[in-house]
Amino acid sequence: MVIMVIIYDCQLTEPPSSVFCFRDATLYSEIFLKNDNLIKCPTGTRTMYWEWIKKNGAHDFVKDIILYEEEQEGIRIGCGDAINFSLLNESSLQDLISIIRSFC
Image (cartoon, rainbow, N blue to C red; front, side, top):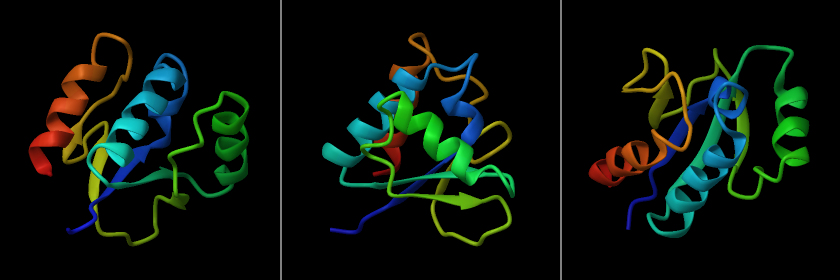
C-alpha cells in the first residue's frame, strides 16, 4: 500500500473555517485511507499553528507542519491548490472527503 501525503493549507484550520471539521478530515484521511496529513504555513507561524490545533484538539492526525517554501510531495489542499478549498466547514467537509477518496 502506498501512503499518500495530504498537505492542508494552515488557513483551513482557522476561522472562518472550522478547526473541528479540519480534525474530522484528517481523522478520516489517516484512519480510513491511511494517508499522512501535514499542514503548510508561512515562516514564523509553525509554533502558533501547532499550539492552535493542539488547544482545539485537532492535532491528533497531523504528522507535521511544514513551511510554504519547503518541498514536499503530496496532494495540496487550499485556495488555488490542486484541491481548491478556501473554506472547510460543515457544508464542505463531505465534499472534501469525497475528493480525497477519489485520489486514493
